Length: 133
Image (cartoon, rainbow, N blue to C red; front, top):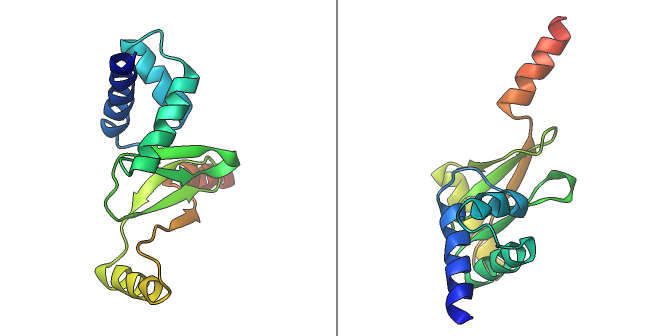
């Protein structure tokens, strides 16, 4: 039983770390089923939570109550589209990152992650096209 659990967890991590998108648990489950058809959604949710807890992944709050996951755990931020909910990485300038780090460390925090909200390029283009019509 333990080997099956480990193989499931490693498949989930492999799927998560092989993408640059910030997938939902549902997306991860669908990709895992291509290699392991019997894997359940509950297993994927449970293992994603374990990966987050162990520091091998981070959870990003998306729009519409969704959670997105990221295997890139080095310091960086995210931007969420306020229309479609897409999540992308955001890397602030070195000066801003240092200022944020200093501010939060002075308050006793040992790290930070910011999530910005804006309009993604695709939704912006759709809005421009709709206005042009």
